[in-house]
Length: 200
Image (cartoon, rainbow, N blue to C red; front, side):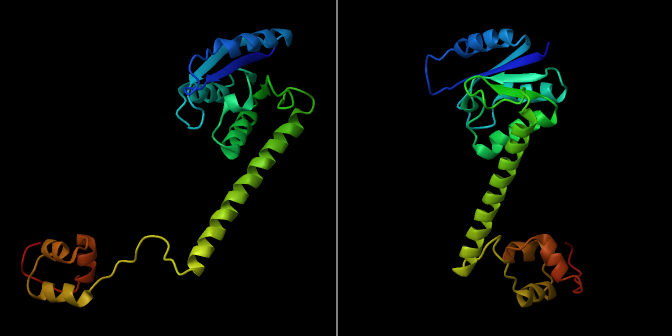
């Protein structure tokens, strides 16, 4: 008999929802499969962010192989973080050696003979989607550069002559940094060859 963990999530936006409405059919289905329910995880959250304590605890238990199968109500109850995070989460379960099954979507199931194919398909889709995102980012950066936009941190403009002049006047590193709005480290690097008897 496989050890199964149940995961249910009710949205904070839908008032009056009771996780029991998901858990009861999940328990019944597990019984028909001769799976032994060892734990149940319930989150009350929108599902669109990663701040779900029971979701995180479920993955921690999966990494320790405390159950063999994760059964959840539907994919949108499992996660609404987007296709890549969702598929990545499913792949993590597979990497831990944990099977997974959606109650409402029986084709999302790695407990069957086609499970390895489905798991490989999920992993490939996640990989392709991540590459699409990277391509969109690269295209956006290239477009911005073509329009003359400067990307990254603004380049620091340093008036070296002014720094050296202040140093020759006997100003301290701290004073020069405050006057020129540079860091002390930058001033020190610029004036390393200029001596001064004034303390820093």
